[in-house]
Image (cartoon, rainbow, N blue to C red):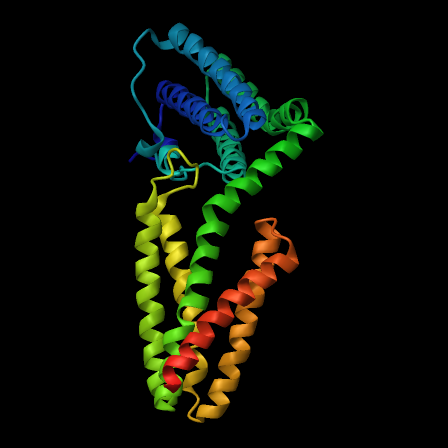
Length: 318
């Protein structure tokens, strides 16, 4: 890597051209990645791409006048001081928050580059162009805000907020809820069967721990292998699998931990209270994110939990 202060004016212009081309392609990737779920925001970044393309053309024209046709390939990773960026193609699916934060950081970094480059330039025309671009980058964020105001009318913002909520439900809530329901309900039978069969807190804890971890691993792989998300829009399969598996294990461990208490009766009472709390959380999530009526959700969850709980008690007491 080379220090920025050691660059010649020719190398500074070549680097600026490379930076503008990279930013232009990043904005194009943003526009492409957002167009399906957030078309208005995609239009904003398409407009920003056009502006970066204009900057690049002006830099190339000046470079030709000063140094000829050949432009050496000097990239950001060849010069010290630039922030390393995660490639856009590795950030999938794209989210609005991630895109806006990344674009803001890009604008600040580019502006600082032009300010520093203009201060070092000795040629008047080069210094003038670099200073002009610094001023334009300084106002770029204002221009981006104007583009957002032009493209993102209130009704469009509402549509994109609904799309954001839909993606959150598909990619996070659904696999998490499936895991929490499976972990909280399906492990009731083995945990309480072991508790009533042995009347020993430690034995019940070991059975509950094994059932919870085993169910988490099973549910995690099942969710990850169910679909790759390309057609359903449910996001990366292994992320869904991790969420589902973790929530499954958490749901089972919740009413397993009380059996660490040596007193069997006290552990049983606390575990029963935890079960009620878990079923309440599941009911609230189904009502909040899945639009299930609160009474209907409560009855369904309570009925399923009661049947599994009763099964464990009957088997453990027999």
